[in-house]
Length: 268
Image 1 (cartoon, rainbow, N blue to C red):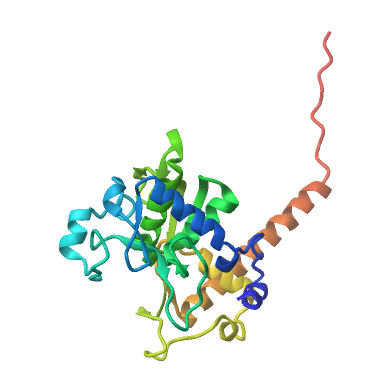
Image 2 (image 1 turned 60 degrees about the vertical axis):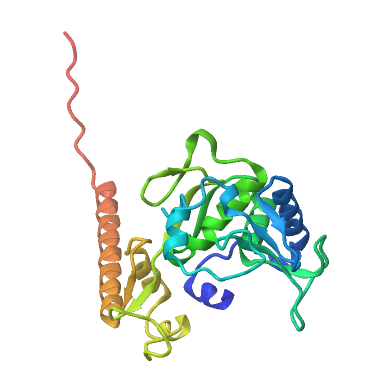
């Protein structure tokens, strides 16, 4: 990943937290959620988030709990109070990594990792949270439930914004969800034989052309990859630089060309 980012001329992040280095923060957040009545330990050693205890659940994705129960496939688990409850801590299984916790050895659930690490680095609230469109539900929805459920803090009078401009009660002010890459109008996948890597693309195109190709599309829109679209981006970038060079040359000519000084009339 770092090598590909470097090749594209993309700056590296200032901080890259690791989940395994933040297990204590995750356990502490789960304990707080239990104390706040938002989570509960089960007899099997798992800990679950009680979605019915978070009234705003579903606000980011526009889903209601009743609609979810009626239309979504939910894993059947006899230890849950509600089929929609999601796991915060999983009891240890043979052959899997495990850490000590108040509920026995186990590992954190996927969603709690992001809430705990962001709270540890940024505090209870922060400005921008990004991710793929497929993460809006359930991952980001669950993040809001965890973070707000633990701290009780939202963005206050500014309110958080969905990409539709709708105000929601969230610990994040702006949620940004990007579209996916498509190849000649089809989803990129190995099974379709249209899968490629950044390194392969950079054998044909300059890194700046690839960056310009990506930036030309709206971040929420699917990005349709094809040689024709990259060639078009290359041509557009060339025209942009040509215009800048022409403007710079004309500016220098204007600076070097003397201008007539307007006559100043002398008062009688």
